[in-house]
Picture 1: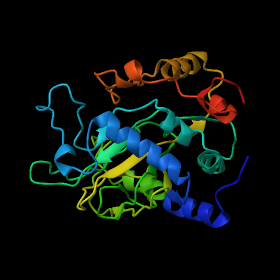
Picture 2: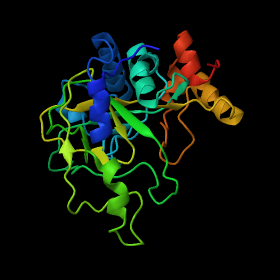
Picture 3: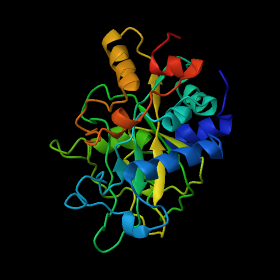
Length: 283
């Protein structure tokens, strides 16, 4: 296993609940995903008029959620980043195990806010914080372009994973376990460079910020978790999604009604590491 995080990185992780891995993948990998996003979304990166796609217009074109989520999951360029050794090594350092599976997740294209596309950003949890024991998860996003702090990237409440248990005692019993009351909490917008991978603890309130810049934010979501090799149903589902180029069958992942990847794509080629991260081969 290649160690990626230094002791200083790990100390920062434990204190703040997030860490930024610089130059996680080569520039060619970033360009490949960015090119695929623009093609998939049928948008022209040089023409801002094409960056906005409301639900009630452009019939037959792929929709873009106001938060920027785009339903692209299985392209070779995405898998090239998922199976990159430096990305894997960072998650292995966090989990302290080499036996990991990678998430099958999507991408983000968050265009600049404007009068008719005034996305304000949001803050939430992807886990149910009412559960006991609390889910132990981490999340990650790879920045495909430079993203200044005001450009619609990731925003988090640093260190909240260490304060949650005290904080939750001050909250009403009927609080929303996925939407935190931000009273008294300080949100930090993270500036990222192209190639930066940020990994954060799932207890951190987080979300996508408002894009006050002149360029879209482009990113790929990637995380890893301890491999569940004894869960054959989960393993077979993951293999099927990869092989058939489908999105996960979950409410949060509506998929692409055009079936672009299914109809036009090719099943991604995996490295020996990628085969293990998918579950095609055991560790």
